[in-house]
Image (cartoon, rainbow, N blue to C red):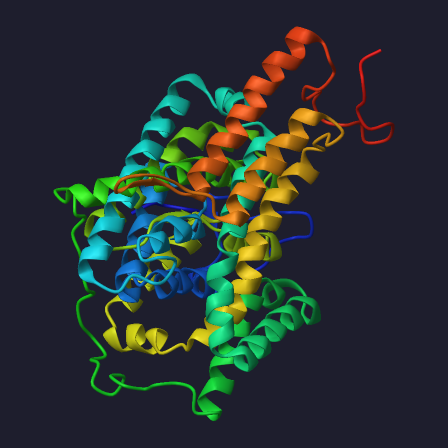
Length: 446
């Protein structure tokens, strides 16, 4: 069991100070902060299996196990909770024409894609650990990284609309609640506005008779989660794998961003040395989850928010959160309750959620001051976005490349080939780097 040093008196954090990863507060305070991390991750983590059709309890189990695995592999130096990744929603639901998976076979087929992504992510982590992270920045510069993250969110818009139209009044109430909570409350409550919006929508649905309680009374309080093995021997499953491959780039961006964020907030640049280990850990956690029926994992911005609000970066709190998620996973009744959430609530919350995924991509551009006066940057985004929003696809018999794959390939090719041509011709159409904080926006070379 890891050993943490007590920070100060174990109860208070002085102004300007932080509780570092290797430190902790008293155990009662640590358990309380761990509980906050559970609440913070819960709203987003349980939505992924609800939307995709994966078992909720199984997803919670591997979320908790993945978190503990992450802490072990990063040598207890990098605080992080591994919740369900929204980047997988599009390829998973594409297996069932944009809807939640309905059969065990569909689930086992989707799990193959999850496993492949996990293995590739772990491989990238080993490479980063050996040679450093700079090659990622060159292969996936801000304009490309932002495009890939954003197009995944915008590609999911039709799925949100499909659920919204089933119960538009309930969906509207849920969406309004999410927005109001985000602007009415400061700090922690504001950061879990999606979770609170789902609660409001569910309560309204109960009082208006739109919730089906079938199976809740019969479900046991304690029991094993529902496991599925990845269908690696199913030839049809491998036809879906290309749809999953762009997700690797999203997980890389999320993990690298998480490590840099923690290093900045703790004022400890040495944490960046753990980037490779973080990628390996998330890759192995995703592989483990995909192998036995859980949703893929990733680091969570919600939990970064809790750390920023409390100034407690102790990994001890994450051991508490991971353990709590594992315990919750062994309650089938909780899983049935989550599955009773009506489509209108999901339609309202995913309208905001999918849009927020797109906004995260746009924020990458803003943070890195991408120069959109340059044609290469313009077309990298323009073409990839239209492909994603329009749902472009290419079919060769049973083999299909979906919009996310095509949009990702388009972004990478347009950016790298366009830059090579523009620089060879000295046209000034290439990416000239970040725009100055004050001054003119790009333009032709002098």
